[in-house]
Length: 83
Picture 1 (cartoon, rainbow, N blue to C red):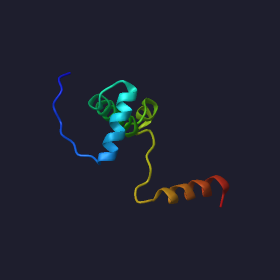
Picture 2 (cartoon, rainbow, N blue to C red):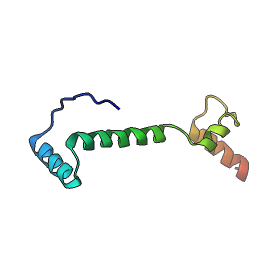
Picture 3 (tube, rainbow, N blue to C red):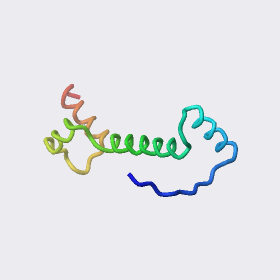
């Protein structure tokens, strides 16, 4: 994939520590930054998308409108335990 030059600003001490880490890892700061961004974006995609079982079950239940989650739970418990 082609790359594009990017200019960033960071605290000098943070930059020095990041350069040291990249050197210890045997990679460039640019490569390390790109991998970090890819990892963050991958995690966000996973967190934002429901799993296949949840997607398959979507729409199976119809909940009454105008009630909060706590009201629905309270109603279900009252039905179950006869309160």
